[in-house]
Amino acid sequence: MVYKEFQDKKLSALGFGAMRLPVSDSIPGTPIDEEKTEEMVDFALRHGVNYFDTAYGYHDGTSEVVMGKVLGKYPRDSYYLATKFPGYDLSNMDKVDTIFEEQLGKCGMEYFDFYLLHNIYEKNIDPYLDPKYGIMDYLLKQKENGRIRHLGFSAHGRYDTMKRFLEAYGDKMEFCQIQLNYLDWKLKDAKANVELLNEYHIPIWVMEPLRGGKLAELSAENEAKLHALRPEEAVPAWAFRFLQSIPGVTMVLSGSVAWGVLPGWMYHAQVGLRSNFVFDGSIYGITWVDLVFPFFLFAIVAAFPFSIGNKYRKGSSRRRIIYDSLLRGFRLTFFAIFIQHIYPWVVSSPQDVRSWLIALGGFALMFPMFMRIPFKMPEYVRMLIKILAYATGVFMLLNIN
Image (cartoon, rainbow, N blue to C red):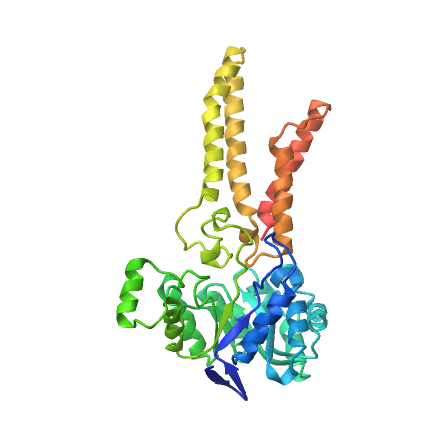
């Protein structure tokens, strides 16, 4: 194992990511398979890995529990444990003290070796910089008390957002975790992020070294080119070799993927294995799942002339037909806008409980919007229910983020 110097510590250059641990069944939300996880952790430790990364929201909050339980069987000085404050969920901003104490309890630890502000991006940068929440003051106090040994942050947002954060707290951050690989070096301008962190002399922690598995397999043509240069080198090794050449890179996190949670064809192209199950708009392509909504709209529009013809034959006036046509067009437009804004990966990245509740609530709201309520009631009550449903939908669109 290769080790990197970090202050007074020697960290394994490869870290163990606990975002997707093995589960006991293929159904989403199934509990973590602790026995398999223990085997993986034991294998990692025996082969020199000493850095383990988890977070408050991983596996619906159970990753911290399982990792703490498994690592608790080994001497405390034989590993380093990292976890994160879930600031991607804005409702947590005033709960930093409660959440931190909860995390210590879940992990069964007296301190964290590394602690990160999770996912600095456009939607939470202002709350992080707002002194009324006292997030930074609290965490610095925990560091002073020895309950946090090293404080850092992870960033999923734009360059200018990271720069704002560093201008405010750069002198207090000891490391930063970013998405970095040879595909994103230019595609997402990860090069600029690296240069910014080097400017602040902040060591770099790498997530997504294989781009969620996308760089583990290449086209036959590209694999042949790499094989000609280094016949003995496996394709994934090139991704790690690239990272070794980047100034400032100290830690590379490699996660375990829970294969079989759902078949690959059941994910959108931008939310599947290639994007590590986090929405990535830079990924091109479609799956059959991406065709469901367009075909649905096509079916509705194709039925439109039949509906108009049927009304005309029944004697509806032209004015009434025009009114109904405009109303249907408005409802379809609203439907398309509304549904695109309540996807959980649009509400929050990474997804949390709040984002899924909003998505489910929005889906339920569409029933009174677009269905004829199958109960006897005065027509004005039906209309009032629809108006309230649409008003709630508009309120969600304006306040969802």
